[in-house]
Image (cartoon, rainbow, N blue to C red; front, side, top):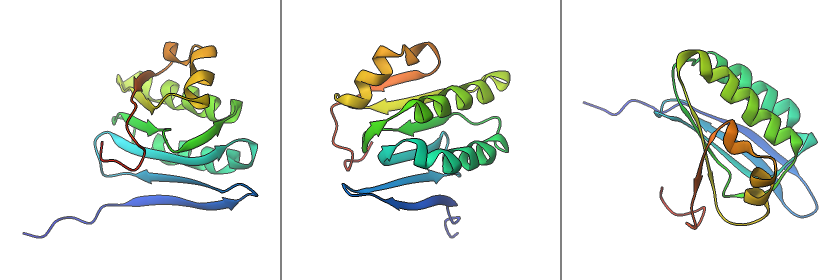
Length: 130
């Protein structure tokens, strides 16, 4: 029996002087996996809004957001995490956030995001298997 094709959703990179921002979502995993790479800021807001709408159609699944490849997380990214957690709550779903030490982890700590989502701290390289 062949393996079912996995559905992924990728936001094309937003070019920047220092790199590219990309958001990738694997819908058929449990939990749904979202990886954010680069700078998650105001320029990514339309893409994050689209992603929230996509996730809203999958209400019962938990979501794992991997921020290890993110180099910057602004209030737009934090608002996304809050909205995703609020979206999961009626069905008992959880948003897990994987983060490694650095500026993104510090932002999450300063804003007490662990009150909204479950933070999974790791020192693992973003390219390594989870």
